[in-house]
Image (cartoon, rainbow over all chains, first blue to last red; front, side):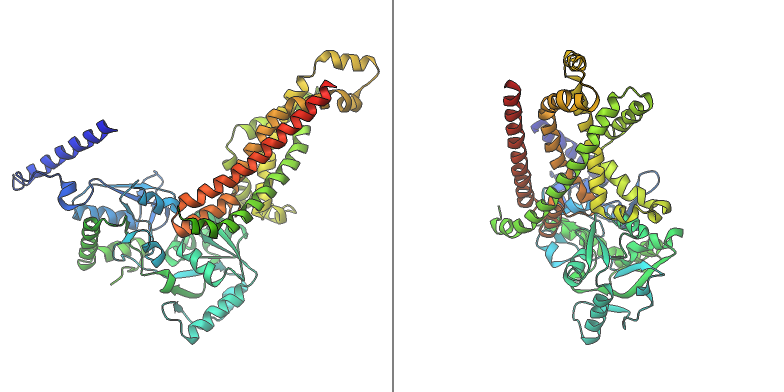
Length: 296
Length: 227
C-alpha cells in the first residue's frame, strides 16, 4: 500500500512538473502538486449510471455518452483536471462516494434535503418535471386533471385537487418507479397507500415492464421518458396528468461530492456558472434534450 | 452504529424475511419434486429421456441464476404469445417468476444430488431385492430411495442454505424480500452498513436453523441405519 501511495505521489509530482513546464516556469518555484494547489483531485473520478438516457448512457460501443458526460468533460476542461468517468450502480452511489471510491457523482441526481444530509451539491445544472406515463389506450389518458403542472413547494387548492384526482385515478393500479429516486420518494409519500408500487433497479427495466403490461403506469423524469416515447414501440405510450416539480423533487440536478471538499465544490460551481453564463450548457441541453433544461 | 435506525428498520426487514421464507419454502418443495423426476430421468435407460433431463441439468447448472431470473421475468414477457397465453396470469407476477426460476434452478442441482445418492446404493442390494421378487416401484421405495436420501442429505442441506441466499436475487425483479427491503432502506437513509449488517444477521439466523435441522435429520437417519 505504501509503495502504491509513493508511486502515486511521484506520478502527481511528475505531472505537476510537466504542467508547470507549459506555463514557462511561471509557477516553477511553487513546490506543491496541483492536487493540493487548488484542492481539486486530479484525475477527478466521476461516477455516473450509464443507464439514464439522455443524461448518461452507453453507446453501441460501450462508451459513456450523454448530456452529463459532455457537461462533465467540459467542466473538467475548465478546472484543468483529467476526468475519469465510470459507470456505477445507481443505488450504491452515495455510500460509495462517502467511502471515497470516487470524487463526484454526475448522474441526474436531484438536489434534495435528504441527500444534502449525506453529501454536498453544486448549484443545479438542469431541471425537468416528473411525469406519469401509461399506454395511450388507457382510460387514464382521457381524464381531465385540471392542471398542466403542480409545483410541490407550496400546494394551493387547485394543485391539491389535481393531486387528489391523480390519487383517485390511480387507486388499485400497479405503478412502477426506479428505486432510490425522488420519484420513488414522491410515490412513497403521495401514492403508496392507494397503489401497488413496484421498484425497479433501472429505468430501462421499468420501461420493459410497462410494455409487458406488468405495470400500468410509470413515474419518472420527463426527459428520462423521451428516449422510450420516441422509439417505435413507445408510440402507443404517452404522458398523462400534471407534471410535478419543486418540493421533494428538489432544486434541480446537481453534482454531488463528499462533504467538506470546499475547494472542489467552489471549482465545480465556478465551472458550471461560467458554462451557464456563456451559453455552453444551453447549447448542450438543446443538443441532447431538444430544449433548454438549464436552471437560470 | 445508528441503533435508532436499526430499531426502526427491523420490522420492515423482518417482513422482508417473511417473503424470503415463502420463496425458499415454495421453491424447495416444487424443486424437490422436480428433482426426483430429474434424477430418475437421468438414470433412465430410455436414451431420449436421459438426454433431455441431462440437457436440462446442464442448462440450469451452467448459467447464473441471476440470468435465469432475468430471462424468465423480462425475457418471456417480451413475447406476445406468452402474454396472451394461459400462463400469463402466473408469469406476469414477479413472485411466481421468482418461484419458477428458483425451483427450476434448485431442481437441476438437487436432481444431481439425488442421482448421486441413488448411484451410491450398492448394486448387490438391488440384485438381492430382485432375487426376492421385489421390483419396480417397491424396489425404489423400500431399498434404493431411503438409502439414497440418507446419502444425499448433507449435500442437500448445502443446497438449502444456498437457496436461502439465492432468494436475494429476487430483489432484482421488484420483489421486496429481505435484500430488497434492505436496499430500499439503505438508499433512503444512505446508511448501508447498519441495514446490511442486520439483513446479514437475519440470513445467518435463518441458515442456522437450516443447519441444525439438517444435522438433526442426519442423526435420526443414521440411527435408523444403525438399527
